[in-house]
Image (tube, rainbow, N blue to C red; front, side, top):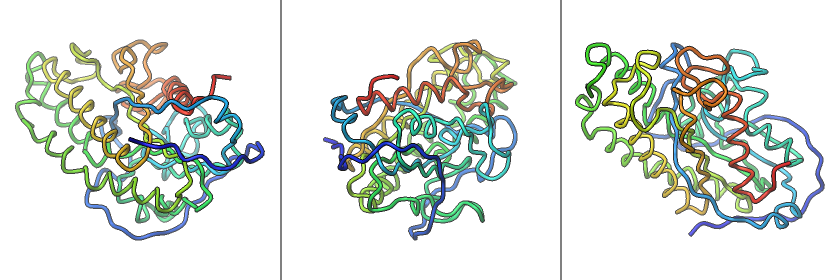
Length: 313
C-alpha cells in the first residue's frame, strides 16, 4: 500500500522559482541528452493509479514547497509560452507551473529537464542543470516525478520502428526486430526506479510524492501511417510496451510509498485532431514532436489535482 504524507498547514502565497543543488549516486542507464530530430524527441508514457484523498484535507493543508522532477514530458519543450530553446527547454506553462498556480503553492522548484534520465537525478545533466534530487529539502511537502522514458529508450525505438515501417507499412517489422527485448528493458529498470523513489522519501520524508504516468502516444491499434510512420502491426506492439512501462513505474513507485497518477486516457493520441490530441505528432502545432502539447499539459494538471483530491477551480 502507498501512503500520502501530509505536512502542517501553511499560508497560500504563490510564487514561481527554480533552483537545484547536488548529490551522489550514479544511475545505470543512459538516454538521449538533448532533443534534436523529430522522432528523437520522443520520451514515452502510460498508466493509472491514484490514491483518494479527501478534498477538505488537501484544502486545509496548503503545500509550502513543491519540487517537480523529470524529463521532457514534464518540462514541456516547445509548448505555448515556451522558455528559451536551449538547455532543459522548460515551458512556462508545463503542468508543474500550472499546478502550483492553481493550488496556490507557496514555492515551486521545477528542475524537470528535456532529455533527462534517472542518472540525472544524481549527477549534473548540463552545466546549468545540477542533479535534480538536490532540489529536495527536508521541508519539501509535495513532489511530482516523471522519469524513465528516456532510460527505456523510446526515442531510439520509435526511430528504429519508423525506419522499418518504410519497407513494410502494413506488417510488424519492428515487433519482429525487437522480440521480447523491450520487456527485458522494462524489467531491468525496476531496481533503479525503486531507488529513485526511496531516495526521494529519504530526502523529503514528509512529502506527498506523486509518480506521474506518461500520456498515451499511439492508439491501441491502426495508427496513422505515414503521418506517424509506425507500421500498422507495430502500433499495438508499441502501445503494449508503453503500457508495460507505466505498469512497472506504478508498482515500483507505490512500493516506496508514492502515489501513481494515471494519465493514460485513450482517445488523445498522436493520430487525433489538434482539438483532441494531448501529444503532438511528427509535424507539431503546439509542442515538440511526440511530446505533450498545451492540452496535454492541462490534462495532466487535472489528473494530478484529482489525485490530490482538490476540486477543479
